Picture 1 (tube, one colour):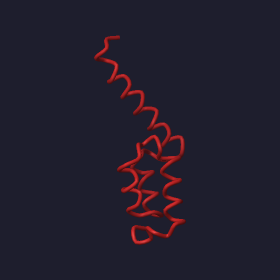
Picture 2: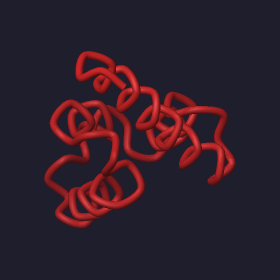
Picture 3: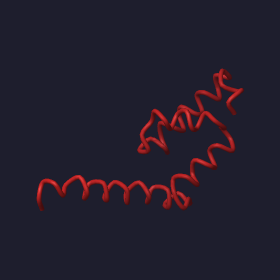
Picture 4: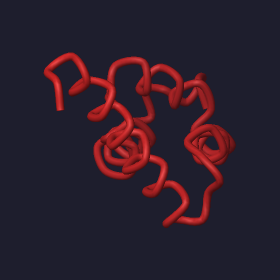
Length: 78
């Protein structure tokens, strides 16, 4: 393998790994998963996904959404 091929292979691996997270949890893809979250958390999903990496979708994102909901400070976005 040549050094310039490494990013392509890494990107392919990460894309497959991330997609399997969604399909393993019953979603066709990330967009379907996020759409379901938007039903409960509204615009806050888009705000948080703009700063959190996709690797946090099933951990950090959920924690942040629940914390925001508990705080009551973001009810106008939900």
